Length: 221
Image (cartoon, rainbow, N blue to C red):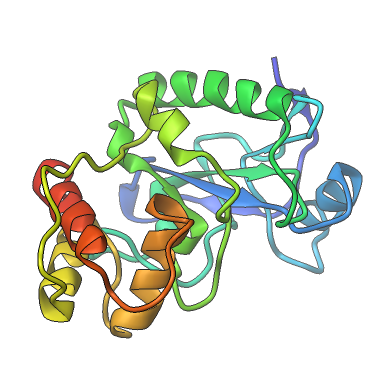
């Protein structure tokens, strides 16, 4: 059971919307106590539904039926107001360190429950950097998305072969997958690689093309 730590920073979900996404974040703070204080401060006007400590302790700050203020400006699948369409999970991590094993174990348990409860498909589990690629980099290149996908808790590309690098085709496929592409190639390629090819650098590559094409074909938003 989660440990209650109520935050005042929430509101009603707008326009009858319900959770269809789960957004993963890292706190980028010193520890969970500092993060809980920030997420519960009326002055900062931010929150999340859940925070998972490095030791695996699960805190609930906002009821799932309510709109937590975690995503900010951004969109996914061509639709904005991600806060009204999502559940936000903060992971106690400074943005540089590996994620602790007890924390990831608890995250996987929580995701399994959320996806069943709200009938969210695995493709609905995304990162903050996915919906806000010009502003955010969390949960970052240290986060193991492939591990989640192997358990049916997210998605991972399985391309048959590399494809020629084509920026326009890459952006078109990225938009079909869900990325907001209005700011062009650079931020989308960065966000895509943070999640799916964290070891990659340099210009758009055939492996990037193959991966995003596969994701767009099998998991369109």
